[in-house]
Image: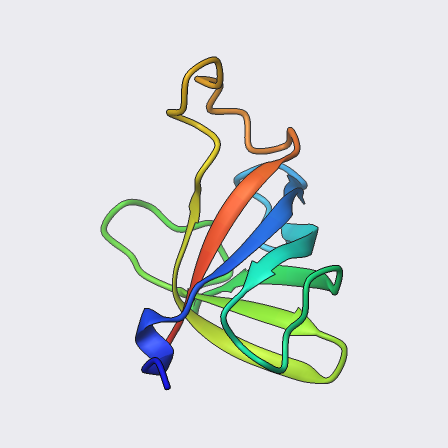
Length: 105
């Protein structure tokens, strides 16, 4: 069995809301998952939570949380896989793209 921190989840979706909105939400669908409880095709939401009511700056940290139905999974990281690949250089995260989630293990 692969340790949780080495298991990956790939989600295709986009962020809804401006980057400074503290209630901003990522919505998408799992396209790959190493976790048995999260299957391809499952709809998910990912939120960024932090202690401050204001949007974070580079010196502050928060937590990404993946929610699928009743399952809530804190994430170690949540990064865009599409940006930086040939033909995909837009930093606009409100456009649909593939994102990689790494569960906090």
